[in-house]
Length: 180
Image (cartoon, rainbow, N blue to C red; front, side, top):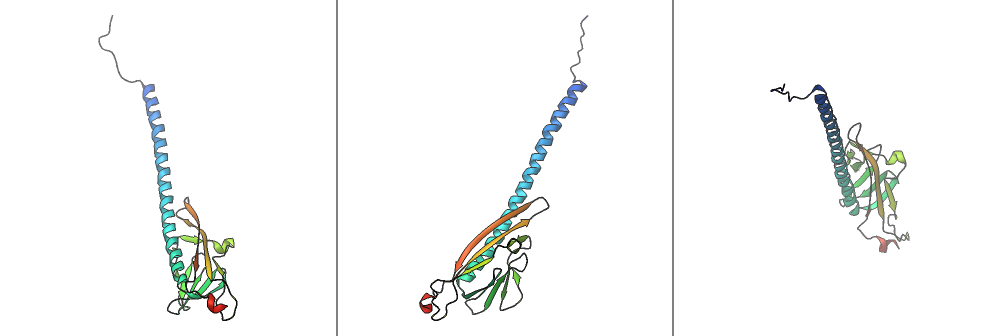
């Protein structure tokens, strides 16, 4: 006797296997998507850090180039006279680079998310080469300053971006003929 009606439905085991495989594939896809989101956040934080650092470095470099009478009090404080004759000071008291004019209130150059670690690591922020020109001092080197910034930016508990940048700025005013 032949059955006229045959069941063509899935069995319970087939359904469990297919749902299990689908769940495994979705779990892998979601975890890789979350990983990509974390990588994107880190890339955005690194871009923000680099933009802020580029601004700070470029700002310091441009102003230092047009200044004169360079003086490095210690490895973390640098002063000079700007074009208007004002005394400009860059300093690193803790983890932010500060700028003050004529001893006024210091203004941070770096964002609060940026942690400059030079002082903690013993790396000088400012290295001054050449001295201020004094008549007959015999100084034969044009003054310049090497600026090194090493630190990190903590975007969240899991995402932390480290950086290390440096630049050199030399005094544009040529002082050698008057020193010799």
